[in-house]
Length: 190
Image (tube, rainbow, N blue to C red; front, top):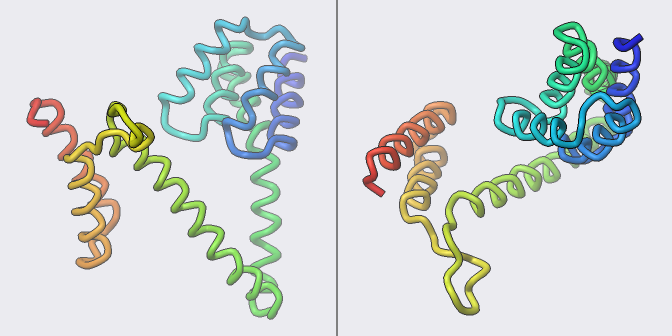
């Protein structure tokens, strides 16, 4: 019975939450309080662990809640419940798009989505850059902008040139940037 409850609870969360993993947290918390699976402190720990591990926060949270509630099988079932709605939607949509890819309306829709995708990527870039490039706040009217971290700004500039001018593989740029950060920050050079 616990497996069915886990599956249905996380299926509802996957179906009715929008805005990504952080949008699912209130729904997950509500389901946990209804069933009494975790205390508030345990839920906070689960969220912290989910943020630290690779992967979407909703999937990680579902897996951890399911595991803590009903072991390995509970983790698998909760994860299946939370990803199933998106999986079905993506599979159905991709099948439709593939079948009708030459239709003028589908071409126009896909063409119209490109600016939205670009805007989402830019928004993510601005968010990450804002948290990476800027350090503590200076006093005065520019307090919102903070101090620019020179090393992060240089890495961002070099990465942009390597990507746009030299057309280097983005994976190589990510690995090189990460290695530079580890070297410079761990050795105290910055």
